[in-house]
Length: 238
Length: 224
Image 1 (tube, rainbow over the protein chains, first blue to last red):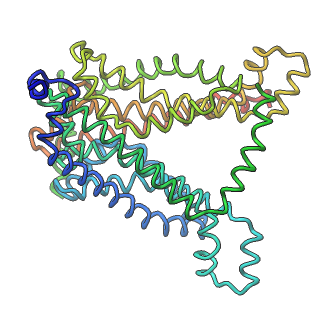
Image 2 (image 1 turned 90 degrees about the vertical axis):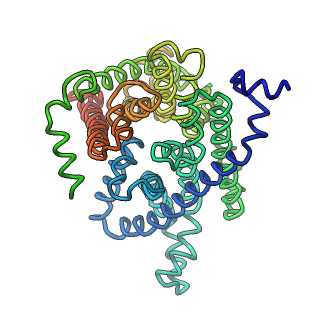
């Protein structure tokens, strides 16, 4: 009985809401995860060749970095609105907007990762008879992984958060529930959807961190040495 | 082609620019909110970041706040504040949300800027007999200036974007033109509003890049 009252009293936290709207919540969460995964995956597929092009030709690097920075400056509501005439009121608007945002971070980080590959490693691989493709995927890409994964984590967390704005055209995952709750002053719905959204971002970040650890086991010993090296400097400053 | 023509017609119709729902009024609201919130957040974040950076403390705090700022959806915070008791106090929910989201880039950039100052320079300044405060004001701050302004720049762009979103829960600013367009299913108005917002964001970014070039203390003739 007390649980039912919380819906009527419009409490922020309401067990009855979770019980009766479980389906709605899980549908919204699934849509949110789907939009995020799709956007980040497409973003990665577009960013990788762009970064390779920018590295190969200096003339391409300037325009690519400039254009992605300009796109990143455009506020999300404007970005989605500008894409509406192109795709109509469809999920493609949100996914395209999110892909464009993720490009800025991903291209930069992939470029930084590839630039951090020691020239000796490249020379050694070439000396062992590695061709350009095998050099890229066998040597450079693994060594660029820490920077790439750092970018992927930032892009993913931002994408989870920006997906909510897609609610303006009805494809915002949990944002839809926030948008609906805003109009009906439904506190429990807004708070639950917001908390779930932050939880999604945190889970995505932790999962990617674990993937990064698994993919780059060699960085762990290095990191320990690095943090030990940093500590005395911090103590001197203090 | 139709949409482009209709958007152009919308933008060139004088009636859309005047009145309380007009572009000029909405632009004024947008700029006013942006400026006030940017000033408040600078006043809060920069002194804290500069002092923490000078003392070399609180690095984890600066990084975590920046991560949290990314993970928490702006839209969710705007709506949560609107539904909170603060929601009945005019534009306060918007102002608070704007300030909250402007603080992370300010704090992180200023902190990193202070920390990245060459330690040898700081040692040299100390060796010359400068006090902690003099080191901070005469050595660390000028050297950290470019990154501090970068932080202000990202904060400004962030505030412009968040102000746009504040139109969803009924705040002022150019975002209102977009939301009204959606309500009227007037695509031309939606696109026109979006263009205005995008141009404003790019202009703000551009102005700060210019300011950064002009004001950098290390580029001033005679200082080098």
